[in-house]
Image 1 (cartoon, rainbow over the protein chains, first blue to last red):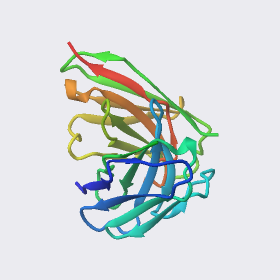
Image 2 (image 1 turned 90 degrees about the vertical axis):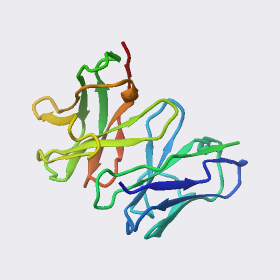
Image 3 (image 1 turned 60 degrees about the horizontal axis):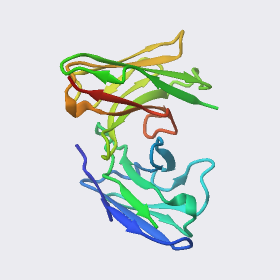
Length: 107
Length: 119
């Protein structure tokens, strides 16, 4: 399986901060990287697909970048509703399409 | 608007077979790359990709669980069914079904259903 490692595992930030979360793949996955946001007791929500494409309806303060093995999710100005856990997921050619361990973003 | 809803037992005994149903609405059946996947999340842990079924009938499974999983569909009911055999307490998790176009990412998710495996 392709291993996905996120850093940090948890992060404290404030409203208005610029935040970056990193995801590293154990082998090259081209741009087959997705980001999800999950709030407690809720299903994940797709934010970014294909490393940098913003899902419809997702605020533009969210952006993704990277290719190969190293990827980032950036939130340009944190809003109160952004405090959640974020997961990356690779969808390269090898099954399963593994997820990272998650990054919990806290106040 | 695409919606999905999972249904099934909340408690299953070890060694039994778990059957979960995902009922969809609002999706396009005419697109060959439309599919439904199953993902699970043990309490307090990360997400795990389990299986994917394209609406054409093509199936994909996580290699580590392949021998225990079967994914099927009932097109007349717009349902996708996941069967997991020989369950163990480590299979305790919230099970989600999710919609995909193309199979690479999940754009719509069900609310999830918590399944506990315990005697």
